[in-house]
Length: 253
Ligand code: NAD
Image (cartoon, rainbow, N blue to C red; front, side):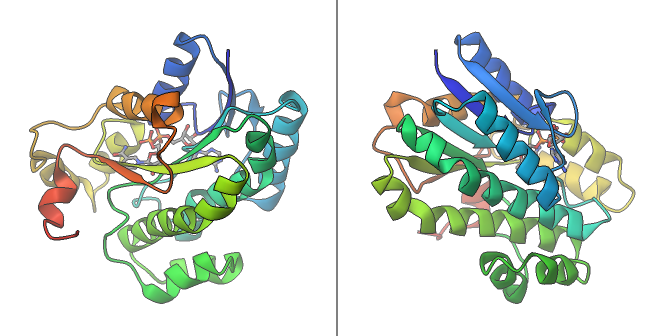
């Protein structure tokens, strides 16, 4: 039995990953604002500290893996909140728990998005990567929701790549999953949104494989990246999007 910590496991993709790990006989310590072992608001420094300290109390002998899945979509009107949860809530947990993952030579998986390469503001991206939370939150309030969402997810992926050498020395693999449009409470909420609803429905209809992703598609990939079969994979971003990224960026390599 392995022990994993997982943020955002209450619904959607995180819930599917949690169910998959539990089914395989592992222990999952879930952190979320609702329906979790540790109730913590990852948008605030206090909430992150609570999440880290409580996880440390439960898993003092180490973690075989950490999965950061908590996130907010582009339709959330409070752009600062998207920034605080999607980026700062993610990297704080990695920084605060990586020594526990090192104890078990474990794996870290960040849930990014296939929106990560999408349009954003370069100065916003730099504020995120320079760890200037208050300034980034302020700048986010001047941007469109999709720019903020894409920016937070691109920053997560860039930050992940920058951690590779240090984490490798600690015996940790770190990777990102980039889901495409997936049928979850998050996208169901966006589909109801008067501003974004129609666009998101058209977006979903253009997926080459002809269907939306399901949370179990993401759990399949997560299970692989957390397993021993992925021992030589680190610093990678796996797009699970039915081919959408290949259509958007056919010459990206
Ligand atoms: P979801 O809304 O079902 O799940 C998000 C989870 O994050 C929920 O359990 C929620 O309670 C939790 N959360 C939100 N704010 C929080 C906070 N302040 N503190 C702690 N937990 C908080 O959405 P989902 O679609 O399953 O998304 C999961 C992840 O996948 C997100 O990071 C999202 O950006 C990413 N993603 C989703 C899609 C998609 O199409 N659904 C596509 C690409 C990436």
